[in-house]
Amino acid sequence: MKSHSLMPPKKWAVANWKQFGRREMARAWCGQLSAAASSCQVVVCPPLPYVSYLRGQLPLSVAVGAQDVSAAADDGAHTGEVGAAMLADVGCGYAIVGHSERRAMGEDDAACAAKLGAAAGAGLIPILCVGESLETRKSGAEAAVEFVTQQLDAALAGLPESTEYNNTNPPRLPLLVAYEPVWAIGSGEAAKVDDIVAMHAALYAQLYEKFDRIALLYGGSVSPSNIGELSQVDCVDGVLVGGASLEAGKFNQIVTALSS
Ligand code: PGA
Image (tube, rainbow, N blue to C red):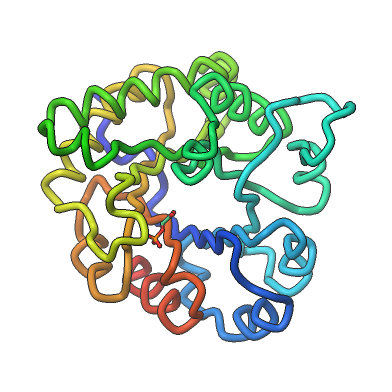
């Protein structure tokens, strides 16, 4: 039987800057990023105009990602869209897919599935975000698990066959899945560890048969004050950080905790 630990010992710290930052901030941030980043896989997802700039500033051991990607795999008349192949071309290794802030703007499960497929097809590692609303959480843990596992199921329909990942040597990482309860994002109130463990167990059970390599992240009000506890949780392979990732000092504390 496979153990939970399908990933190398490295943990993941993903910074999601959302619509924040300027070039000067990015320059200073890169200068201050902790050396511990070398023992933790750091992925920085800035607003698109700064992707190339960050790629030029950061060592190659630190990855750059996009916060979204076009659902259209092929180039075409898609005004305002940015294709996965373009992101790969300017040095992105990752793309966030299905963040709740984008779902709130109308992105549905079908779009998430298409984006997952487009990102994977261009060689990017998608970071798929799933998570329940406060209303769903209030109806109980079971309802939350059911909702989130359905979101995952729907999105996975867009990924190429699992065998394509498992048959490479070593098997390629098909995706990162970030459990981000909507009510925990930007609220200052992270999910309870027991609830994260229960949700990760359900997600893992869903992914386990299909893929040889899986990493499950947690996101939602991750900060220097709760990373100590989160970093000790076995089934948490890393974190997706919004607000606290904008300050290099705070993000460094998170990276350091995940590296120890
Ligand atoms: P937060 O955001 O850390 O500010 O809660 C997380 C996210 O939106 O990915």
